[in-house]
Length: 394
Ligand code: PEP
Ligand code: CO
Image (cartoon, rainbow, N blue to C red; front, side, top):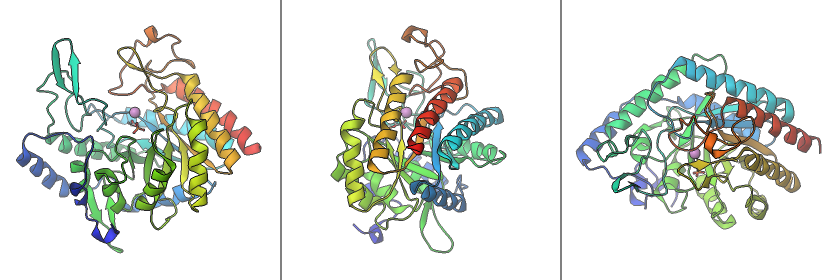
């Protein structure tokens, strides 16, 4: 299908994974209509600027630092929290910039990162069951069937929250771009706007949107949606993705090989990256593609055992180490780092300066996956910087 056949709603003809069922179609339509009149969160000119900066990163002249909450919630926003996240970014960027000798492009998981893909659709606790929590943009965190009902009004709340958050970001002294997973398509579709000059379609829900590892099927609705918007976009690349599928996704999502368009966010896990990443890099190189390659050491290293997900600092660092080594061996610029992190003093990840034992993860606040706290993130960036400086020198 060529882009001529694309329109903001063309995803509706494709199979869509991970979308909630809304019980009231009229309420859904009303929310979508309001969103189509709503103010842009990410102005098109800013997304164009980000694309230019990511084009530099793809060719080795910049480095992407992307990070923030796994799932944003609707408490807040507050200037304090936005400011402390920006401060954390500044510290990490300083360290990474020195190591890579390039400018660091800062992209937060913020102002729209409130819809989550889930492995199950129903949650069971004892003899009670309720629909699973899919992020504040969809339903409520509290475990009861009423709160867990998908409510389209939450999309309007989410838009207001994102707009207020962006207004706070705009008060920061240095640029922080916004990004989120383009998961909830009834929210995304009405936030597509046409630019004045060229007539291209842009998402104004965030500067950078990515397709998740669970929704990246080449024939699926999420890829169809992202195909037609002109923003810089990312693909989360997990271990079940084959090199041929990756190539197909690149052809679908970036047929014109536009500089800065495509970021591949590799999240293979420390124990799979050696077997998979070299093949991906060779396949794309042979096809004359030069996307921005970024390491997400969080999502392939999530352990599921106890009541909560678990992530270990050393395992995550091991994946970054292998990412850098493989990229170097393949002659590819290791262009970025994608982290789940918060400046708050939470204890959600094991190791580094944080707790050494799962029983000591006492201050858990994440609405979804475990994040590095501020100290862990600073240490992690310093460790990555050491490894990257070695790779750059080599
Ligand atoms: C995420 O980034 O929070 C996420 C769900 O990632 P992935 O799609 O890579 O699993
Ligand atoms: Co996550």
